[in-house]
Structure formats: C-alpha cells, structure tokens
Image 1 (cartoon, rainbow, N blue to C red):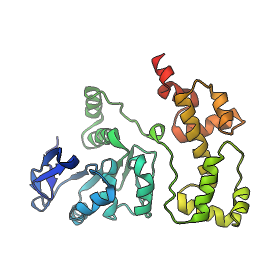
Image 2 (cartoon, rainbow, N blue to C red):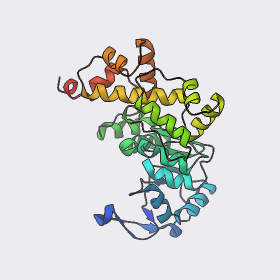
Image 3 (cartoon, rainbow, N blue to C red):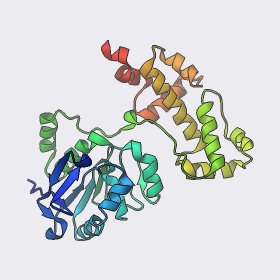
Length: 288
C-alpha cells in the first residue's frame, strides 16, 4: 500500500550524538516526485535542527507545490513551520517546546493540546509517541479504517486519541522582554491561591486594564484569566499526583471555592476530571 523511502541530505546521518546512524535510501535531489513527505522529530535543539536541515526546506515546498502532502512528527513541526506552508494554519507539536515554537513562528496557529492536525494536505502530531496516532490517521486516510484499526490492535495503540492535554505541564514563557508582564506572571505564580483580578494587576504595574490585557496576551499567548487558571490547575495537578488530599481539599488549596467551577476548568485544561486525573497519576491510586 505504501512504497516507503528514507530520504536525506546525505546517505548516513548520525543521531543522538553518534549513538546510532540512519541510512538514507536516496538523497532529496534524487527524488523528483512523491505523494507524502513525513518529517520526523528533530534530534536536539529545534532551532539548531532547523539550521542543520535548511536545505530540506525548498525541496519540501517544491514537492508540496507539485501535489505532495506533508506531515510532521513531534518537533519535526519546526522544519515544517520553517517552510512557511503553515502560516495562518493550525499545527501541533510537543507541549514542552510550545513557548519556543510560538516565539519562532508567530504566524502559525499552534494548537498545543491537539494530537493530530489536518489542514490543506498538511498534517502534524503532538509530542513524542503521539506521532503513532498521526500514522494511524494517515493509514486510515490513504487506505481505509479497517486497516488502521488492525494496525492499532497489532501495536496495542489507542486509536482516535485526540488530545495531549492530560500530559501537559504548564510553564508560562518569560522570554518576551516585557518586564511589567513578567512581573505580573511571577506575582500570579507566587500568589495563585489568592483571588487575583485583572484590575489588581493593572494597578500594581501601573498599566491600564486594556493595555495590560493586550500586552499579556501578546507576551504569553494567554489572557490574564487563562494564565491564572492554568497556574492554579497546574498546582492542583501536582497535589493530586503526590498527596492524599481529596478533590475538595485540593480545590481550596489552589484558591477555588466553587467545586463546579473547579471541575469545569480542570477538565477544560487537562481533558480529565480531577478524580480521573488523580486515579491516573497518583502513585497510591495506581497501586490500588
């Protein structure tokens, strides 16, 4: 069903500091036309990986212009984004490099929680082994559902998984150079258990409310309220993972008083209820 070629800039590519070597079937300029390009995850720093592989970029663009579809796995998204083919489009990548990706590619709409994206013949996957879900997705699209289900069963994969939210660990970027906004972020992170308002932050940092909200969103890719929620929920996740506190105790500890609001926000950010999250990741619950 697929004629697969491993194509590179050179025949032998050392990986992981030379621990092993990938052997390409052919060089990029030997392959004049293909139906699908799959860009693997980069080895090491993404920005450096883009630089090392920059000769790939015009070839990928040319192939796409000639009708090929393009998919990126994990932080291979950095190479795909470097082509400019996804400007204004949605993409996924590993949640660990979310801040770096947004900084390098502000014209791409990063959907950090997604496992798979599909837009105009361009695909991407979330972090690490999420690429397997994209492979299943492509098998279903190019072949049929039955074959994709068979592959999922043979390799013991959960098919149709669409979110990596439960795996994400929130860390707001502070490398944006806006010092008042950085100060607001640090205040939120140190005082997340208290009730913090936008007006309070605006007054503290001598900014108008609208100016604060605009600059905060630009710097962090979150509204002030979203940032507060994500910091609170990250603290709640840590408590649910490591302590024996019940959901109500955790809720009060991170500054929520309304159990319904807490559960709704928790599910929105993680894709799981607080109880489901604790049962999945708490060591004592796992043993039980």
